[in-house]
Length: 237
Image (cartoon, rainbow, N blue to C red; front, side):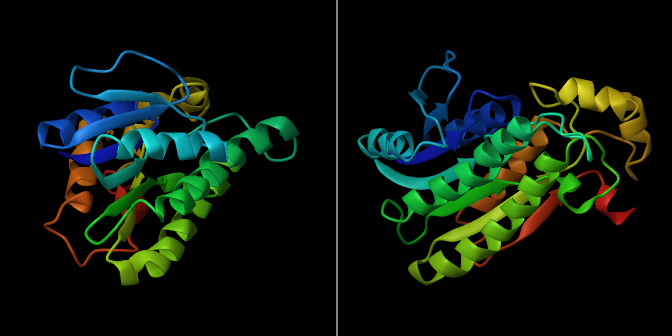
């Protein structure tokens, strides 16, 4: 049986790119998402609500029936407008529940399904350490929490040979679904985003997929607990 890679949020732009590359590299991919959409031939779709422990447990059960779980990539995420001083409480709760609580639930549940040589990859954001990205403080706070979870689970699962890392994308060429395009426009649009990065370029989902594959591969058995910026040099500004 093939080794299994679970990609939560696997129907999104980033998740789908990671799923496709992992499949090309020989893994059997389980795409887990709340939004049911067709997936490429050879991949398996499992509907999953990461905020529901029972749904998360069902996801692992379905994946484990196909083979040994080797990698879990938490590519799910929700971006809603939450401007400081006037944010909707429901929007704040929803973002934190999906992005942070949902990631913690998946990492917790992974404990009984992963063994030596397995890896977990979380997705943070360059906005986690920037106060000047306005109108989305819940998203930023949730991603700062993701970076904390990365370190916590790297220490907790390390003795069992399980590596836990995170990547922090910068401004993406394709804004996040939901309110991503609207918030990008408020920041001046993609041209402005491009101009404030040292490399004067936006990050693509394919670039993130290659970094994800590297961090989850057997080539880097000693890398764990890191948050790797993939941001065209933005964090150096």
